Image 1: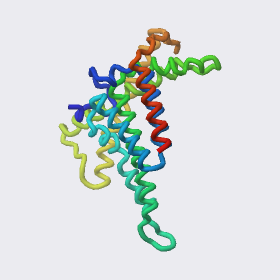
Image 2 (image 1 turned 135 degrees about the horizontal axis):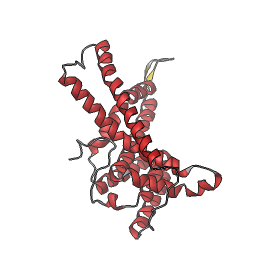
Image 3 (image 1 turned 60 degrees about the vertical axis):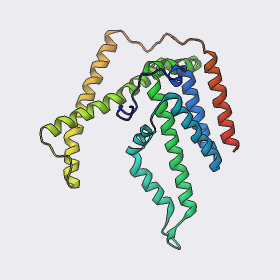
Image 4 (image 1 turned 90 degrees about the vertical axis):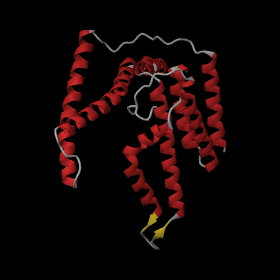
Amino acid sequence: MRGREVLGAYVAGDTLAHRLDARVKIVLLILATVAVFAADAPWGLLLAAAGLVAALVASRTSPTLVVRGLRPAALILAFSVLANAVVLVGQPGLSLDGLSRSALAVARIALLVGFALTLSSTTMPTEVATALSWLMAPLSRVGVPVGGISTATSIALRFIPITATELERIRAAQRARGARQDGGALEVLAGWRRVLVPLVVALFRRADDLAEAMADRCYTGEQTSMARPLRPVDWVALALGLAWVLAAALL
């Protein structure tokens, strides 16, 4: 079951989404972003949601993963809905137009989170770095450090599950020592202070170790492209994604 997986971590598998080229998946994510924001009518958003369902099925990703991805921003999303729905000036009350606008905004965010998590759970960080390096290769002619950007992206993606694992390890150690992480607001803040300080120290230690390893290997930021030619299934996925975006925008 993937519900227990670390959020944002790569999950090994042999699904259709896993077998797609990383360059194709990144382009499809960009197309999905365009489809989500280009769809104004409810039918267009429903078609975009159908695309997310197809992505979840193709990657065998549990929908609860999307819910977990929205949990950190749940408070902000709820406040956004209330701020748009409640009218305090003029005739105080509930605005149905504001409620519908905020609901559409939350739906768009949920769809984008779902597409991004599908990409991260089916693509290894090294594949993402290689794909970004290949896609941004023309920018190197104007002085853009393509190799450095792709490497930094790969490291950032790799550190997301590492941070979550380190956080859970520290919280478990604090609970084992009898530290309370509940109670009033001040107690909760004090509990998080005891967790965040060792977390930051541990992450800086990992970053120092990584920097030393890169320096020992004489890393210069240059990368050799290992991208292979696209297969027929990759071209079919790109064509279907483009047709899906056009249909969502037209609806």
